[in-house]
Amino acid sequence: MNIILLDHTEYADKFKDICHKFKTTVDVEVFETDSKFIDAALGTDKIEKANAVFINTSIGDHDFTSLVYEIKEQLEHTPVVYLSSNIPEDLLKIYFIDPYFKPFAILPHPASEEAVLRILEQLLFLQSDGNRYFIVKNRKSMNMVLKTHDILYFESNKRKVLIHTLDDEYEMYTKIGNLQTSLPGFFLKPHNSFLINMYYVERYDASSVHMKKGITIPISNSCRKKFTEKIDLYLKSAKNDTLYI
Image (cartoon, rainbow, N blue to C red; front, side, top):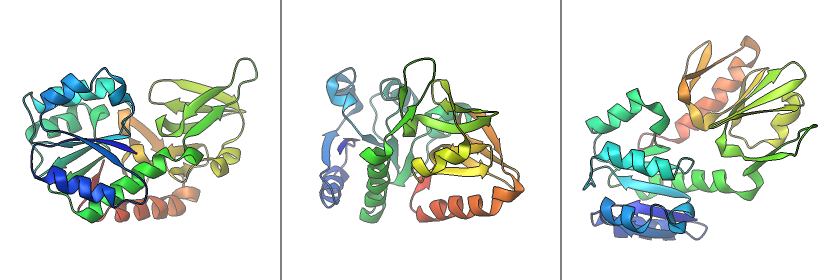
């Protein structure tokens, strides 16, 4: 796994030591300023190989919001984790005005070994070969191969299933019930007509799930108990020192 860390403090060395304790090899490249990161990484193969970017929110030769936008333009589908001793106003602006730019998670700075290892576990799961791809089988054209993490949700539509991704929409002739067993465990069923990617869930209430990009999915009475048990178990696993959004 390849990690990029933007951090100008002594914590960078500790972060690298923690990553070296993970069960698989983690290569960490540290940039002490965002300018060095932009000059050395953006627009090169180096950035494309990153599995995640961790950013100390207090770093900055640039406005932090501008930095995040620039990074996300290059790393649209790469998880970004914020390391923050507090939540600055710029972050709140991103949360409430432009939710598309929300990070994968927020950890306190400095983050504990337990918290970092938990995030690495999540990242490894997302990128494991067995859970990485979904094949859209099409009768009239070539099959499409999608990354499962890019899929927001599946929606039943008569004899077809619509596949909604971050960037597009696809369809295939199948049933929702036939898909769930072949998908990673982070796809949950709040309704018999939907399967959703829980990593894009922002919140839920008794009747609906609210996801990124302003999407609302209904929760049916028949699916509510099992769905809420699973999503609550995931949220509780984050404990108090990790904020998933």
